Amino acid sequence: MSTTRNRRTLAAVLAALACMALAVTAFASDGGDAAASGMYATFWALVPPIVAIGLALITKEAYSSLFIGILVGALFQCGFSPVDTLNTIVSDGLVSAIEGNAGIFLFLVLLGIIVALVNASGGSAAFGRWAERSIKTRMGAILATFVLGVLIFIDDYFNCLTVGSVMRPVTDGHKISRQKLAYLIDATAAPVCMIAPVSSWAAAVSGVAADLDTGVSGIQLFIRAIPYNFYSLLTFVFIIGLAVMKFDYGPMKLHEMNARLKGQLGALENSGTEMGNSKGRVIDLIIPVIILFVLCTVGMLYVGGFFGATPWTDDSLAGDFIGAFGNTDAFVGLPWGGLVALVLIVIYLVARRVLSFKEAMACVPKGFIAMVPPITILTLAVSLKSMTGALGADEFVRAAMVGASKGLYSLLPAVIFLVACLLAFASGTSWGTFGILIPIVVSVFDPSSTLLTIGISACLAGAVCGDHCSPISDTTIMASAGAQCDHVIHVSTQLPYAITVAAVSFVCFVVAGFVQNAVICLLLGAVLTVCTLAALRTVTGKAEAK
Image 1: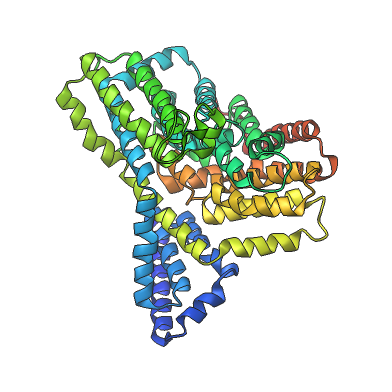
Image 2: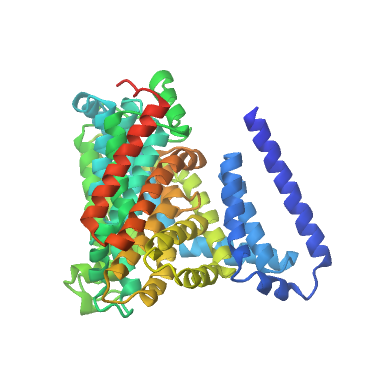
């Protein structure tokens, strides 16, 4: 019944939008530019992502919801001119999204092929059998997934897809839903990258802050902000507490009960759960993962100029590890490493005689097909971000921030956290969010004050939180791809968890604005997180059995 109602809602929205577009375009003339400019840098700039996110959560269908958001954004941008709207959607939206993200699309395909190879070789099945013997409980499987997610801190895309590939057999064996796996992936990927000094995210933050008047280098400012990044740190406390207390709440509880009691894991039909032949050993999973990890890291360092001059850098960064990460391009480095890794993995598996060369080549289309859904969603999501950016969403938020800074000085970190959450949620990008807000934060606070560090942390924490919650976030899309589960269901199941941690983090930022002591605020946050979980456990009933 709910599915029928959702479809009717979607049809009604589509019809309303079509009527609105036709009605407005019928009266549109040369005043199109005026209409567009009237919406620039206003709240209307946030309407397209709000429409897309709202429809996605209502209909549980991502493709049409994202496209409708793109359509609304293009209509606003072009003053409801039908021809200009179509050109904007195709040229400035879809084509630009494909061109700008070709590198990550290639990496997705390469990783999909590697996963198909490891499955076909029997490596995943062997690892699943080993994990079943070694990891005895659901809590152990959850914590093992969490630990692996924390260990892979170089890049969030790489984290999402690698942790998903490795841990799917383990969580499937312990009847943990794919939605829970997706949450664990998503809740470690971006947060750990945001507190790791050696990561693509640290490099991005350092780059934004490099030329600002802060009195310290960009990487120093990033490191100083780590203890105050309450959302990232408290998310880890939340995951451990949830695993130890052995319960779930919200929509996740139903999916976990279905997985545990009925064996309904919530996997996609093309998720490749088949585990290949019996010749495979655990080493046939471990060695490909190590090869991939090492070569992707080397690829990012190479593109960043660590080994000498490249087409992207000069030789001034040779031997500078941090500098190379600060200047690398993950969209080039990851495909670079992934392609070399794929060749070596094929050679290894064929030499091991667990796969013939023909069987290995048969995995190429399988891997590509498995990655079509995330590539499609990512293309639409990036197109929507382009529409939002063209409407001046960043200017609207910048004006709101300047207005909020008057009379709320000690509470400003908490305000910054909320603004960053909302901007990242609406735009689907944490990098874009802190790129907009960090210069504003630096201009508001005294460079020598602790409040500047707390404000930067609030900006980074809010960016991660909003990115974590947003259906159009690339990291959220990657987490769904890594777990091979429905993307919109992943978003709806993890929202209550992310909002819980965000609420505790907000309280910590309020306190931090006055106390300005990271240890006290973190202890307070940890206690509040555990107490909140205990209260939720009491409300939702007894803990689930092992």
